[in-house]
Image 1 (cartoon, rainbow, N blue to C red):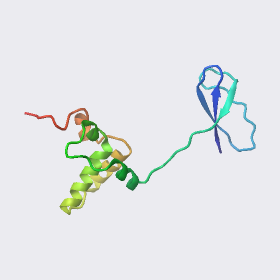
Image 2 (image 1 turned 135 degrees about the vertical axis):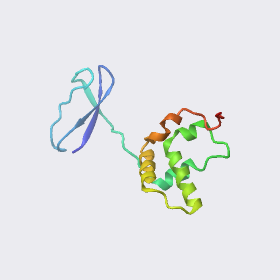
Image 3 (image 1 turned 90 degrees about the vertical axis):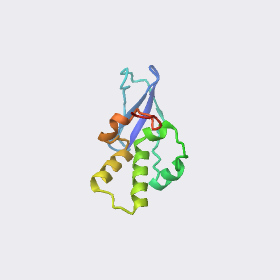
Length: 124
């Protein structure tokens, strides 16, 4: 089942249409303005990276990483995994689940309050 993409001549927005088979005839309408004046365009594609590639590309933070580094929940998981490994400890299963959620971009509940905090701020 291919997904075809079209550009609307009226509003210039892209519309995607799921087609049940390649041989099926398609007469799409713009999802935004309803126009039938569309031109088929080249569809975008997904590029998936392995976890190893993501880690290699992001690298270790410098000794003074930017504040943005810690706002990315995936980096919190990397740091926690590294610390458990350095200590030679088994990571609790609940923490593993939180890290997996972080890899998908979800900030762990206990850390949501800290999401906008600066890692270099001092608290009294």
